[in-house]
Image (cartoon, rainbow over all chains, first blue to last red; front, side, top):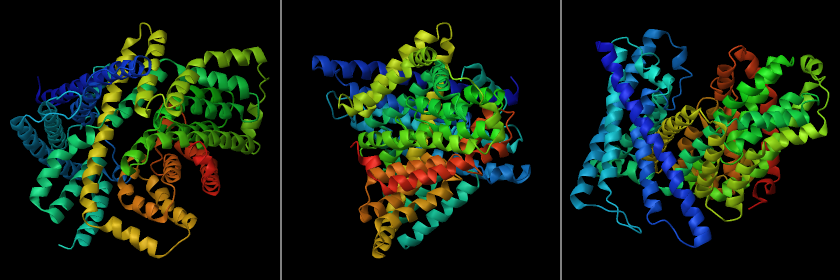
Length: 179
Length: 431
């Protein structure tokens, strides 16, 4: 595997992880619909349906965060940057990429600390069942960590004058439906 | 440091990062964290930064976002958009500007299962624009009708923008969704009437509108074939309005029904369903990154007291509510030309909403008006997201023609906003 392909393999893995998180949407439907129908017609509810759905959403978001970055799906205001010549645009890309990396790295550190605290205290949800919170807080930290990794790789590519994500295996994965 | 100075530095820093092209979510988050560090110190920063992403996202109401995104994907996969266009064309295709009017009504139909303006424009442009161009419509009319018609996606429930507005302000999502029904239908009607009127001055459209009316049985058959669109709308809005389910639950039931419909229509094309799940995951992550970033910004900005002081300052002028409303909405016109609706709402509400509350303006009406402003934003240069989406779907279109085609619709939007302000019952009547 060439150095260039090695850089894009991480994108591919992150996009695949994000794809797996999409399945959480399907699970939400499979939980909410029977819950609504059971409540309306049988005056029963599925135990812990709310807690499970909430945490499926957490999975969906944080496992998809880095994949969304790999696909350049985050909202950006590019009206001015797009009009700049390539060299200053690249420099701005590196500067904003580093700032984004700093943000994601800091959030990883902070949320990991919180997850560790939740693990030590065995923090649980308040509801019909007591669900351990720490695995989901770990997912939050993992999501930010993977985002930081993806941002770092994108900055590295800009420094090496490689495409950020528009071409290469990440984009191919997206096009082929793997993404 | 004086909190007010921190607040101004935050606003300046945010503008700088946004203009430099940093993703809006990260820029908001970074500036918010910096503001918190300056005003509250490191212990508070550690606590808030560590806990906020989980506490903001672990919210049952918010599962409506992936569910409505997925429902839109399923409707597209099942071909509901094509059937909606065919039905609209059968009924109004023969009148002056009929295909463009049909496109608007088809957009309205698709908007009932899609909460996104961009998704509606992208879907309908692939179906309706080639039809109109083949029939001899001008590029301007064909592309303008679809780009503007796509904006109905954010107004007619379900609406991603209204979900975000509800999240940012605490206004009841049920009330917002119910209140959006009449303005959404009214917008489609005004667009249709406007197209009919403007077509008189478009020689190409006049020449192209020579089709014979479809016979009544054919019209009824086309309407019958689009029953699934009606069914999904009735399931979602009926369940909300009848109090059978919350908006989140109703959307889940709608998405479940859309899944069954899609499975029925896409035998052998299951890959498209998988693609819908993947796109839902990516879009959801991007939207929530924005919510997390804006939450951090709001936390930091609130500590500077600028929003509260701004509300008090505006209140001191004792302006009539209508004038205040117009003044507050004007900046949205400028902002909307540069950033998307979701970001615009999350960016502005920490400052603007206290002003609106202080003035006693109905927050539901304000939410609908802000949504109308986001509609204008997606068809206004230089960003005009829907314009680029239509151009992307139909590369043969000239971008200038698409923007020109949107101009009459911007005028119609101003008229609609004036109507909604003058007659608030159009918004609040169903509540």
